[in-house]
Structures are given as structure tokens and as C-alpha cells.
Amino acid sequence: MKIIILTGNQLRHTYFRKRLALNPNIEVLATYCESNNKLAQVVKTSNPLAEEHLRVRSQSEEDFFGEFIAFSDDNSNPRQIESGQINTQSIINEIIKLSPDLIVSYGCSIIKGELLSVFQGRFVNLHLGLSPYYMGSGTNYWPFVNNEPEYCGVTFMQIDAGVDTGEIIHQIQADYGCTDHPVVIGNRLIIKMTRVCAELVRHFDKLTSTPQSSFDSRIYKNKDFSDDSVKVYYQAFSNSVKSVLDNKEKVKTELTLVQQELLEK
Image (cartoon, rainbow, N blue to C red; front, side):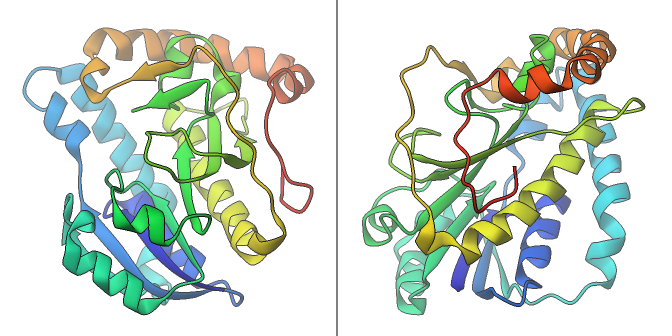
């Protein structure tokens, strides 16, 4: 399967593109890596506790992904671009000319216009969160703030003109351990997501998608990320993880998730 990856330029994005490109069943024609860290810019001057949380998250990403990134081959053909540049006509023309079988997006800007129509049905977005339950920004952060850890996961969806509204192909939930820290759960989930994504790409022609059900979604934006929310996040976390470990089967089955038989749950 020949694919193009649209992603960011942080460590988790670099891990994703390099790991996916090492799969023998996948040829990455090009990866467009956007320089985009709007959340850090939002909290930098006014939210010291939130800024500290981002520093902890960055250190955890270095611990999880740094060595792999440093010592693995890079078959992803990366091209560094500025934030939003993915929607410029020159980049759009490049992608169309490369003629991929599939486009995979994770952590890039909102895609607009021609790419959506040209690659309709062949454009998969990886949404960190379970749609339609949580949408927008920080969708694996707010479930812990709201004491709903079962809503932490990833949605693989067909992309459309909306934000996190496309037809769902497959969903996975996070895995938990008794000594977990919040950012550890997120990084472990990215590793799982990458592994499942490789299988999705390999079996893509055999998969179906399901329209999102009508649901009163929780929608968050970067500006909602505050010191107060970080306090609640860490205060609630230990109880949330204990609840998950005590009720594993319930957590795995109480939500209505879309899942493919061919893909890892």
C-alpha cells in the first residue's frame, strides 16, 4: 500500500511516521510534517501549572520515543512545512501528483478543500479520543478531568469537512497499569495506535466505515486548558486508574465502539 502521511513535528509524530514506514507492507511516498504546537503557545505566559504539565509530557515522550527515533531508519520521506501550509495549492498539487493509495493524517492542521474531494474514501484521520463522545482539543485529557477514563482512546475515521465528524472505521481504548502516570497512558496508547494503524492500512480495502451516531458531544478547545483543569486532572487520576483496574471488563464493554474483526481491539 502506497501512502502519504500528514502529521506534526513533535516526538510522538516523528515516532508515528518512522514506525509506520518500517512496515514491509507499507510504502510511504512522502510525509508532510507541520511545525505546530499551538497549545504550548496558548499556555506559555498565563498558566504556569499547565505549562509544567506540558514539560512533563515532553519528557515522557523523550523517554518513550527518543531512542527509537535516534537509532531507527527513516523510510518516511519527511518534508518539513509550516503550520497550515498543508492546505496550500503547491502542496496539494504535490500530493495529487504522487497518487497515493491512501492518505493518513495524525496531528496536522484541519484539512480543507481539494484534498477532501480528490481522496474521498481514501483519507483516514487518526483522532486521539473517542468520537463522538469527546471532540476538539485534548480529547484524551478531558476524560480524566471529568473522571471518565473509559473514554480515553483513539478513533480511526474517514476524514470529511467537519472536525472529528467523519465516518468511523475502528476504535481502541487505552490500556492501564497500577503504577501509571497520566502521560504514560497517552504514550502507550500512541504505540498501540501506530501498530493498529499499520494493520488498518494493510487491510484497508476490506474495511467498512460507520456514520457517527447522534450524541451530545463534549467539545473542547485549546483555550479551555487551564491551571484549574490540570489540578483536577491530577487529583482525579489515581482514583480513575483504580476504577479502571477494578472494573476492566465493564470499562471495555460499556461504550458503543466501532471495531473491525480484522484489526486489533
